[in-house]
Image 1: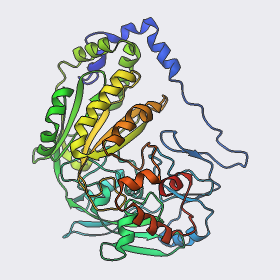
Image 2: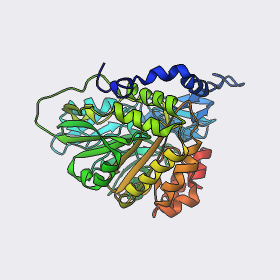
Image 3: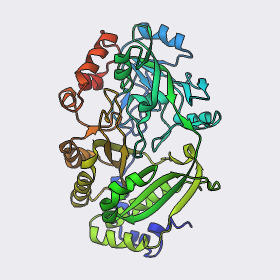
Length: 465
């Protein structure tokens, strides 16, 4: 048994308390969610996102094999036309009764410039495939998100990001894009060519058309050292602003009701490769759930038991190419809310988030994630012209997540946070206009390229007005 597994299973013999029936009560409350019928009355097949928070019965499903096919399809397709990547967004970006559009057949490398470290990629390429693809030409993306199952188009459309001082989100490294418009026209966009469309559609929520190709500014392939260290949460919060600047990539996961956090850092190194071992995050997460199940109504005992079990956990170290270490497997499904705050508001807001969860939401066992992201100039980017500190809270897919809206979202909004476009939030056009200086300009561009609202489902109508 690894040291990580001993965090919650060793030492105190916590599972022996399951005989008291507490675990059984929680398992009964955490039943599998009710499933919708696989077919509706019209015989249309069910679509669901990864977390089960958004569903639809689209009338048409399309998967064009080329940009030309896509340009032919869009003017004639049944509206609303909604592109779908991996279905990893938690919001209702995708659901449609019209056409569900997959880009899975639009994948792979188009061309690259070895001297400039640029690569043009088809937009349906999965991030998990993009890492080894770029490594094969000596390049890497400067940063990667925690999960790499998204398509490139989906990651850009929602403002997907990683972490690191001076590191922008994925869209910040886009130099050109090709967008197939709802009328079938093809727009080549950059800072110098159709710049308004470039700035509006880089983070476009699938509302401006459908991406077909993207040119990325990459970096030379490098090796990094990943270190995961268990630390006291209070000490980490005091040191976080300094720590964030001392590493190439830094983030941390607060383990609620334990007083502990996992600090994760990545730094460039020339040390010999030390591959990461088998993924154990899922096992550790389920152990946190068992701890919750046993001590949900006795938080003081929950904390003492956790700290006793976590007292002698050594750091975990891996050394490899960055694309192999920056992203992680996340097989345990969850629901998520994430906001991006002005960097100087992050720690204070996080303290309040932790306090509210530990006071009023004893059922929470998922970690709280904190990252940093550099500013960029995409009009609908949550990081538009400001360095941001993100805070993300999670709930197991089987369990209630209303507490996110009641307890957490007010804190993040009061701190001036902008929501992650692919994650749960309650904001609409009136709120967003106050948060995004170029929101009206983006609305105007969207109306110009999609005057008949062919890309607009009910969720996007709420967002854009």
